[in-house]
Image (cartoon, rainbow, N blue to C red):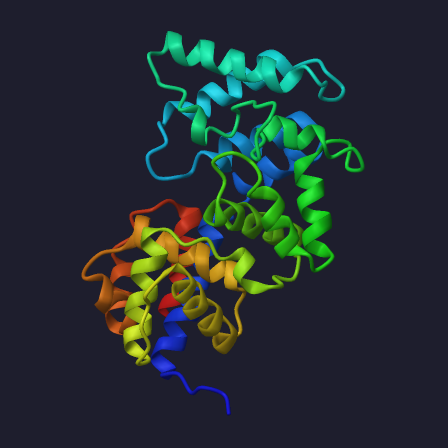
Length: 282
């Protein structure tokens, strides 16, 4: 027998999923992927600078240093060469030294290694011959075939990339290409906001969240019950927690009157954002 969730909670879940449209806004999100589709280097830059450094403790400067080092060593190449992984890491290290930033090679996705179980993102792209070394096309092809778990495992071979970052990337790839999210957990990155909101929702339905797997499962189950994409709910919850929250988190994500008030207080956002928020007040 299917679990019966409070109607008020499902309404909030549906509205939260709609907030993902702010994250996916046409002026930003699609353009990044359209650029990445055009070649192996834009795709590698997008993955490395846009996703692979999104871990706790990563220096903000890493993203810019990654873009610069990849442009300096990969620019003009029709395909990555065997010398590129080492050259890119050396350039990143040089730029980091000039900027007085520690490169932190143990968890740096550009860190080249010859005899290690982990590879750099450049080494990973070098191995994708069938996809012309384009990591975006590779991820889409694998996920589209229902093998997102295999894609997750492969992405985790890149230095510094764990479950969260693999799911973060695959969630966005799936949204851009309208790929079915199967298995669903492969598209549920869990950060501090997802964890906190999952705990609030779990308490409302007499469940508990002990670890990140529990948090992801709460999101998956509620997305299914509310008939929304799990990735949309995940992205919308991040927008709600990090950008739109006004008031006590537990009240806002569990009670419609508090949710609506928090949204109403965000009409100060630009027209594009308001066009998403306003319909939620109906």
